[in-house]
Image (cartoon, rainbow, N blue to C red; front, side, top):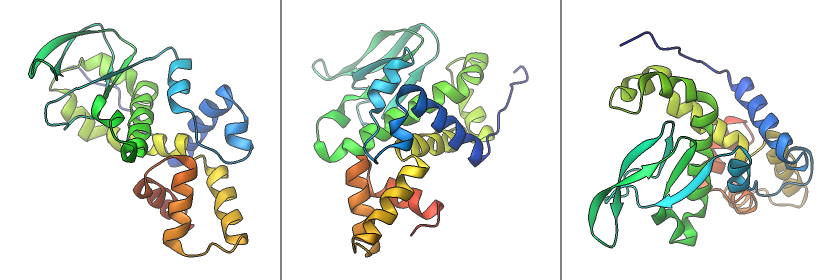
Amino acid sequence: MDKIERKYYRDTTLEGIARRILCAYEEELYAGQPKAVPIEEIIEAHGITLVYQYIRKNGRILGKTIFEDGVDAVWDMDEQQYILFPVQAGTILIDATLCEDEKKLGRLRFTCAHELAHWLLHKSIFEAVGQDDNIDAITEACCLEVQANMLASAILMPLPQIKKCFYKLHSAGVKWRSEVIRKMAELFQVSVQAMEIRLTQQRLV
């Protein structure tokens, strides 16, 4: 395999990338009143096509970013078999099961943000190796999934916004850890787990 360019991002760099993404779309998302980030609209503003499709029979893969034109094997729910699905570079496939249950809204939004992060951070790497089994080794070596998760968190839960919301809740008398996390997760439309991780990383809980 040819030598692949490996990119490493500091936490502060990822926070800065998230800020640029949000402010380019709407500055209020970063500096205004805390609210849920319209991640699907932001993705489309980057010229990326979102496609909701059953990706695997077992639901093991929730999202996939397409870096080059071709076909991808997806699960046909009606035919109950895998089919070859034409895809174009600049497409994000989201597993349709995430759209079938309101309780999965947080997972749906995080998956969208995670795949956007792959497109923005790792496009050159995936294009260099192609979308084949070799990418597993590159993913492990470069911690691509961790980077995508971190950027997704920073986009969906902007740092100044979660701090603003956190201290506002405390001022209003909401001090129980679980209650703070739950209320903030509802406001930003993310899972409780994602919000807990974000707040813990920022040493707020």
